[in-house]
Amino acid sequence: MKPSYNDLFLEILSILNYEDKENFVKRFEQMNHLEAVTNCIEKLPESIKAEILARPEDPQTLMKYLSKDEYIQEVTTVSTKALGDFLQHVTPALTEEQKEKISAAFLN
Image 1: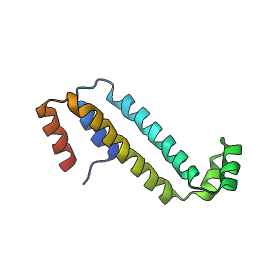
Image 2: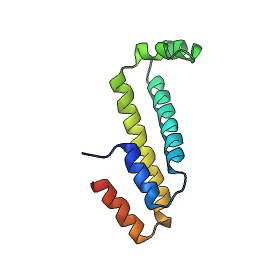
Image 3: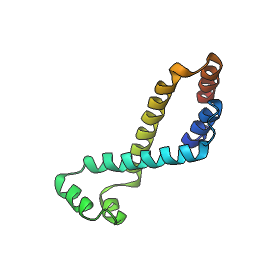
């Protein structure tokens, strides 16, 4: 079975010897969800955007116009890109052993 995004990210952070892995992944995930919602809203017509933005505390307004599948797809896209960006940023500082372990994590 393919590891979840969070499991993969936690494994990568373990390879990097990052101490506060769980909180880092939690914050990273929250940012990904926020970006996914923003991206989904941006794709909507202006009148619907205005309705959603007029009541940001009411998630039901957004859910009227956004299917669960669309949202999950956008979260997956954002998360994949964010993880890729993270790896691209840290790769120059990695040892060869860390690079090999991270590559192996993707193959599991």
